[in-house]
Length: 252
Image (cartoon, rainbow, N blue to C red; front, side, top):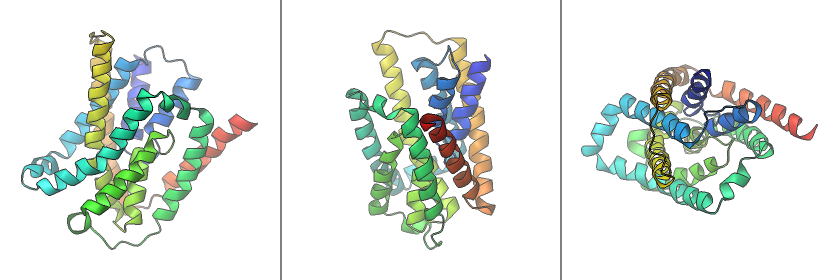
């Protein structure tokens, strides 16, 4: 039960702030032996995060029926990471990216990139300037998140800041783009469970979904409040320090 709590906490918090949930889950599972961290639990954690985004942005999602333009842009932006992600999984190349060394360098380098992007001025806003071209390019940036340590939310925010969106709109873009991605991961994971004839749905799965949902919802709410008042510097510092610590453990 304690393991599920920790995994849900890591997933719920790190999925939506620019620090990479996959790298933190890998790091913790590498140094701490989690007996319950199988595919079924991993899928449950992502389902919890997916439901949290749906609940928090319910008004924006309902507006898709009126503003299909935004819906199409979000889908367009999500296509590259879905296609390449499936290719990497099918070819098993994704496993080669999950090394501690790769995580260390990605955490460090993209922490610096996040810092550079946050220096860009605020000129554009979500309603007026989120064009199909911008959506697609941000989607291409998002592909980099397949490398653990990059952070899907982090690279989406970074790309949006490069396009001069303010921090709040950049974060909203990142959150909205998480909807199809989390849905895709959840559906793919469930299909693999069915393929492996693992149709069991235990109490641990339900607890994982609930805890991940709660931690994700809290993170979304307070991160948006945080980003209205402060810069991304604290996450930059955290990433650089964590990257240095990881690389130190790898090379020394």
